Image 1 (cartoon, helix red, strand yellow):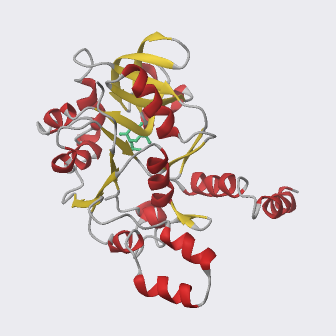
Image 2: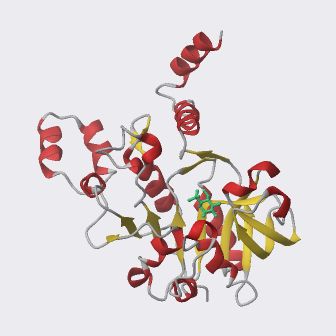
Length: 290
Ligand code: G1P
């Protein structure tokens, strides 16, 4: 019997220097797509995939994140006395129950692998998901849910993947691909940010993972990889051959919110899915397209 995936890690310790000055006093993950912070989009995707326990790996200057996912009793009762039930419902959606949300700090910026390792005590012996909130995926079925369904079929470890232009392989973890049925690929190897001429394929890992807890033991070795950082990709690569490892070509569109134009595009794409504003936004876009 396969253990269900109930825990998810959200690495949110980054400084967000690319978005200064907006990120001077506000964590990057709190920047909103229209009216909902990136991190809340990620949490909602996790919830829809059956995640019940959330681990935020934070750093200094991230208090706004704690406040956002807490219950704000003063605000709740203010909205209630005003009879503003719509806003109340929106605010209550942000709350994560006590005992279901864990914070741990990544005290040094040693890389994504190190950030994930910081969550090891909460993960214990359970399979877990990782969501990088910078990657916003628009899809009919939430990306992580698609992965959980694939996990129920094949177990082991799964990363969400998409094709990228060869000249971009040095931005991502790239797979060496074995058997490929068009949806699921058997992973034979992976390498972090390879040069285009050295990349084993153009299939890149996006910020969605389902991993077995053994990856934590490998991360504990603290081996440095690309850019001198403790890379998650390097530790995952060591699981290959010991445990099943698949890449899932997810259905949907990934938006990279780590850069300004990508963030703007994600904002527009998200706005166009919203019945409350899509028509007006389309009108605005037409105005500026000319
Ligand atoms: C991280 C991972 C990389 C992955 C990418 C997806 O890179 O290290 O393997 O492809 O996220 O967004 P980063 O974007 O932190 O440089």
